Amino acid sequence: GNLPKACCRTPREVDEADDVHSCFFSKGVFRDALNIQRSDFMNNSEQFIVLNETHLPQMAELYKNSFGREPWNDDWSDKNQLTQYIKEISCSFNSLNYGLFLDEKLIAVSIGMIRHWWEGTNYNIEEFCVSPEFQGNGIGSRFMGMIEADIKNRGLCGIFLQTDNDKPAYNFYRKNGFSDLSSHVSLYKRVKE
Image (cartoon, rainbow, N blue to C red; front, top):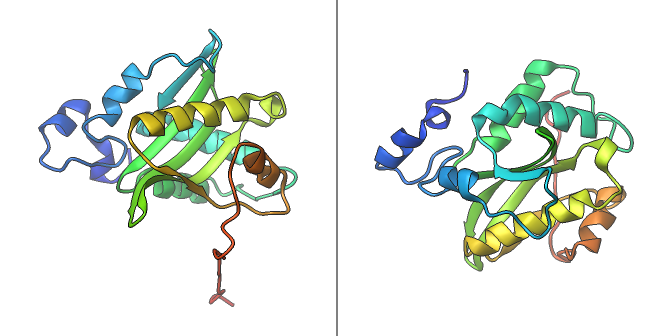
């Protein structure tokens, strides 16, 4: 496809590469996609995997369906803009993207990266969403539990994310054990007229 070269390595190329990190694959991440243990959180028709570039169209579609309605109403009608956004956030250095499939349909996604910081190494979530038709029945919390188990197994310290405090997602994250960072604020300056 049109992905940067680092994102288009085969598992063999990753194993042979001198660079231990690439877009979706590190020396263990691709194998993890094949070997993630069935979790106590999962039922028989669910599959929890580390996503790779073959899942980009499904990730984009789920993201658009989740955020293109209330309460966000994001306008992702520009398919190119959506595709580029999903590529940008899911194909960065140390990317780690999780998916939850139900009967082979992607119903939840977490797009993020492993980030090193002086306090320890964390999983930073850029985007997290559950298909609207599956919200409100515990799937998001189960999915988050699977992610937490996997990052703990990887030896990471925690999860960092940002969300709007006036949206239902804020209460979802609070319910799942996330806390506000009292000294952290997000800033933005518009430069285009």
